Image 1: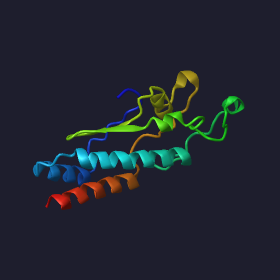
Image 2 (image 1 turned 45 degrees about the horizontal axis):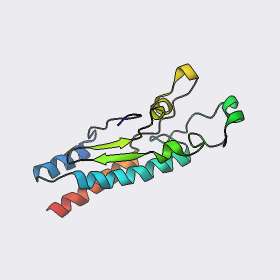
Image 3 (image 1 turned 90 degrees about the vertical axis):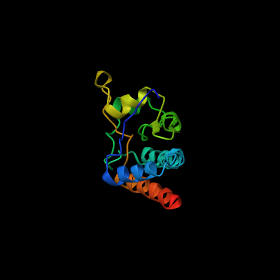
Image 4 (image 1 turned 45 degrees about the vertical axis):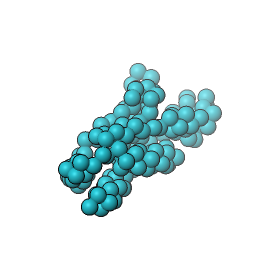
Length: 145
């Protein structure tokens, strides 16, 4: 998937344990990954509307020069909603790819110094997202038992 991408390799022990448990039961992880992908689309769209990063920090404000030429100068990263509308996911039995195919998604996430574009992190898991991911895996674990 081109564009912005961050890999989250089961960074918490709870998520890693849930994945290991499902794998040990020969479970195909495509179903829980698809459920997580659907959740992440909603979660990321909510963050776009709130104008904040996964850790809850407000995005850098728009520059005055940009406000003068923008269609909707008060909405950061939502001028026409295109980037937010391209969020997608691809689950498999072993991983979930989530992000956007738009290369400029990375420029917005990490910043692009050459164009004076500040970083506005939008991709990733919030603490509440991590809790939901764990709940989804636990639900699939209880179904498998």
